Image 1 (cartoon, rainbow, N blue to C red):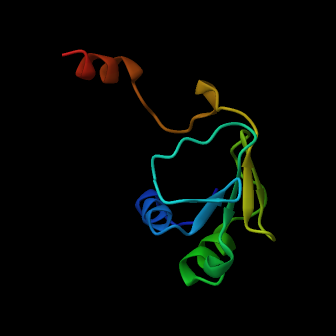
Image 2: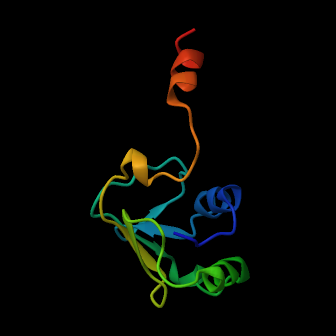
Length: 102
């Protein structure tokens, strides 16, 4: 959603419980969200420089059709699960399957 500058930074923010999912504190970075879930920055965390700077970098709408972001409220929601063609990360799934099938 853009609340952090990098994925490792986002994981650390989650581990330090700076986010709520459906109004419940989450501190597990591998937490699985599902369509309909609402993710928000905790009130005490909304003034953190790292989050404010990351939000300033977001120009316009997200280029992620399965997510919705409200920058003013620092909330986002999961609209749907992403489709394979929505992913902008180059992954050869067959290589992953081969690695884990050994």
